[in-house]
Image (tube, rainbow, N blue to C red; front, top):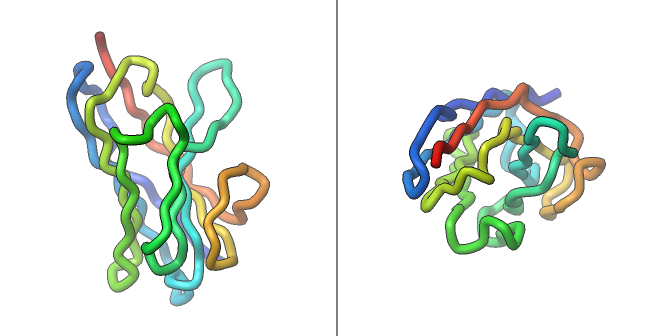
Length: 124
């Protein structure tokens, strides 16, 4: 069992930056691929970014490519999402997710564990 706790959300002006962190419990974190998703009010949860077990392979949604960076530190059991050049349309609850395989994925059903989310609000 893996528990995920997100932090780092908040309110920022358009063009600003935030860094989200996800702390994972358990000794098998390094075997899991990780992902970030987001959900805006009235919308489905959508993929943002994913990273494989080693951190060598990443993939991003087109809407955040070039602005967001996912990274992980297996020694600290953490995965981060650096968000730059934020836009009002980035406003959502952001969720950290883990899957019990080493390869990254972009769909909600591919993930086995989820955090409770952290709110990101971007004002215009």
